[in-house]
Amino acid sequence: MKARVTVTLKTGVLDPQGKAIEGALKSLGIEGVESVRQGKVFDIELAGADRARAEDALKAACEKLLANTVIENFRVEIGG
Image (cartoon, rainbow, N blue to C red; front, top):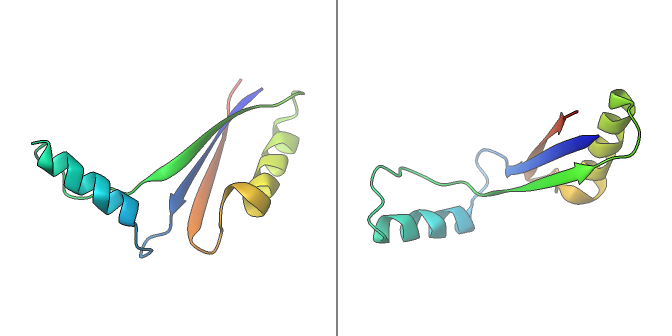
């Protein structure tokens, strides 16, 4: 089973890397960029077929390792 975990900064948390990317895009002449927020994506393959168990395991992984839940949100998507 495949899963994707997306981790992003919470609203209101400063994102210096996003600001740097925003500035670089503008300096490259990319027009229309109002703001950039950067995040992380984890593509994870899991053994087994129990979706509920997989989601619980991935949420635990996020809370313990993949995300800093003080400043970051996470989203778990389970594929086929």
